[in-house]
Image 1 (cartoon, rainbow, N blue to C red):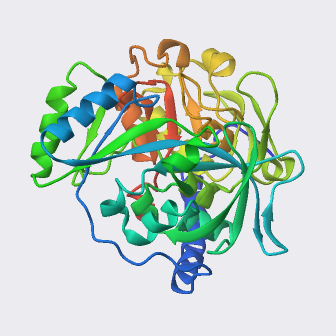
Image 2 (cartoon, rainbow, N blue to C red):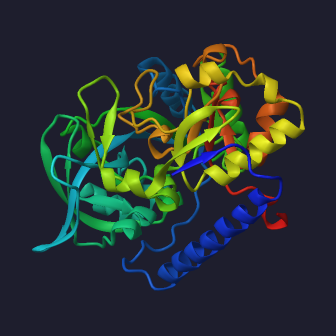
Amino acid sequence: MTSSGWRPKGTTASWLIDVQRVLSVAIAAVMVVAMFPASPVVADVPFVPAVRVWQPGGLTPDTLQRIVDVATDRSWRWAVRHAGTLQLTSVTRGEEIVQAAPNGFVYPMSSMAVDPAAAREPLGSVIADALALGEVVMGETSARLRGAQPGDHVTFFGWDGTLRTFRVAAIAPDQLVGYAELVFATEVAAGFGFDRPSSVDVWGDALVGEIADALERTLLDVLVGVVRPDDPVDVDGTLPTALVKQRFGEFAYRPTGSGDAIQIESSWVEANIVTIDWPLFGLFRCHRAVLPYLEAALEDVVEEGFAGQINRQDFQVAGGCYNPRLIRGGDKGGAISRHSWGIAIDINPSANPYGGVVTFDPRFAAILQEWGFAWGGGWLFTDGGHFEWNHLPSHLSDV
């Protein structure tokens, strides 16, 4: 499918209304599933107000040690979270196949490992006990996507390249496990090479602000994020992988053997990726469900007089939208780029290099943010030319 040129002002609104109707049906379906879940969810767990410290590309040994020293000196509790992507091949229930990737392909699973003894307080006894027994816990959104339930078995490739199978002991509320799809005990995960300290949760008998301030003072010379539980939602925060799959579909993939490029199963690509020809960008490919928001944003860009900021040639050579690959830039734990879903777009990347100076006018970026896109220019480690969809526009109901 190819679309040429701009539609008259107003047609985007009707398209967005159609999309909103589809989303409303999807949301209603999710609500029905939530009311009658196929998989029991772990019981409510008391909220533990922890401060989280994270570092782009994972925690260095020095940063981790400094965090631990601060917590230990003040008798605060702490738990390290390891994060990365595992490659799922199947979910089985006895002799029944619940889900299986096409031959030679795998499903990307955003995964976490944590010491169940250290994290027993924030995770609760059900999850901690399951992890301590060497079993896996699955996040609720991921479980619903594939129809998994406790007692099923997941088979995946560990980071050591071996095929592993674990029993699903429990389904956990997403927020409790940070929207991780699979959760393991640290010691168990290390057995298949999954060892990547990503963040540390710190809590104790002190005000959250006191804990956060102490950590920030200790890490003044380090590029880290210190997140308080009562912080407002980050407009430039990335959508968790489980929620990306829920909105835009889950695909199976396989490495191509050529750098960070991956091959995505053709049926998913044919159903979701379309080819577009727009004057500001030229010919490019993107996810069909994100195009209404992108088009509406670009119409506003033109109206506000910022169209001249877009370098069409650079977009064609170095930018783009759909690009099946891993996330670039340091150790990302094998994570799949949002470009692989066709929901991220790079504009003027040569003038806004990853980790470099941001040259985009913030007013230009604000227009895309208003239409649901996170901006890499607002990230801790900047990516000024990168925009990726992360939420429904707040004013959509007014369209």
